[in-house]
Length: 289
Ligand SMILES: O=C(O)CCC(=O)C(=O)O
Image (cartoon, rainbow, N blue to C red):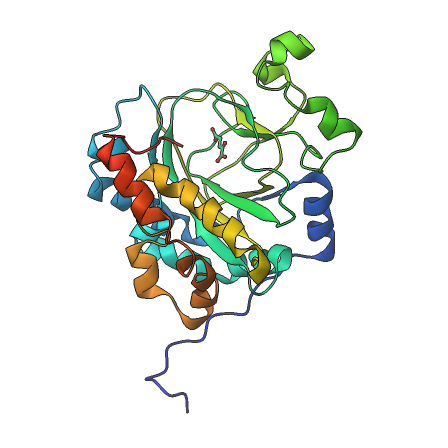
């Protein structure tokens, strides 16, 4: 007879296959079509709820389509969205790529406007970082789908070295506009996940004025000997004017296994408060990315 007072056990994690892991380490990204299509309605409701609670756009003002609206942290503001970290598909893919003790590093929610030029999100730290991107509109190359340059995440070597410092101005360096740079266009539908290594060159072209997207950023656990670097890294998030890296709803709903992915960051985010105070004293606004 089941005990009705016990919460229902989560279905087992869904790890990546060995081939998917090899694809990610070799090419630097994964596209997982329809992985979350069964819950995408709830996810979109959560996205809308967070923005509605925060004035609809950047810095509490309605999104007006002239510049990206960005909110950090994002899923951490909503209990349903926070629980994505415990979803067996997401938890399974994160443990497959980053180990059982991975860190959740935060998320951003966005209304993107127009193009996002070629860039990397991070460099070579020896700690694996990745981003899970949720695009909430159907996108292809004609309306703002994410593009990645497969293999460009590798630390040095012929191809990555040939790209270094050049993709910011592809016309000068390669005689190609941003959208002409050879790349994989990840045409996505809501419910798909795009997962990529922070070091991969990525961009988006031809997007409209309200392209809905949010992310989850995660990394391997940092060794104790490198905690000062983690503290500095978290400190860079002061530009979003946040005093804690993990947001309130995330802390409230975290299950024991979620806590494991929060505790290293929660113990090392103490640079944020004084830095935010200094930025506010200078009258700075929250960063758009
Ligand atoms: O979708 C986009 O415009 C770009 C996304 C991006 O650059 C990122 O999340 O790092």
